[in-house]
Amino acid sequence: MKIDPVAYVGAVVREVAVRERDGKPARAAIATRSYDTDIADLWDALTNPERIPRWFLPVSGDLKLGGRYQFQGHAGGEITTCEPPHRLAVTWEAMGTVSWLTVTLADDGSRGTRLELEHLSLIEGDFWDRYGPGAVGVGWDLGLMGLALYLATAPGQLFDRAAAAAWPGSDDGKDFIRRSSADWCRASIKAGTDESAARRAEANTTAFYCGEPEPGGG
Image (cartoon, rainbow, N blue to C red; front, side, top):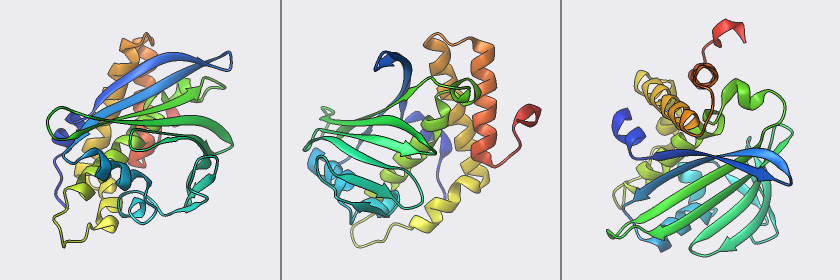
């Protein structure tokens, strides 16, 4: 599978926002990009349990407002907002933590649809200092790229999900990860993070996603 890392990293605008949640300090990793499809089709690709596994992971559960979902081998949570075809919000429960995911869709003015994904996390323990926004941001960049590749698949052709899943381990895939991680680092610095701390977090995140040892033996 030949994918241009520069083009797909460049398709996303990344922002880090300083927030609070329940009176506690939090940070939001925000990724925005447009897709060349109408809002109804993009909403369906994001919410239809038959389509979600074609670009992300198999999903099960009571997929309606107030219900719970579970991605196979990954996160689960509660569906807290569902306003078709514009806004979906869920809790994101993984590795013993809870964070909050919100996806907002809008017409982008050029016959496409703009997607904004916000992942809000509490600043607890040393996880944020160690990995920064790229901990979730790089993963969502890979997911948003998979969604773009799926939506661009010609009618009658099958999207090769297995090849897409293996791609991050390739040289191009690792190039994508490094570029994505670096851009989340820049967004973190812009939001006020100390530059040296942001770059340490970038290095750790890059190593994690590339399957390499963290600098300093972390």
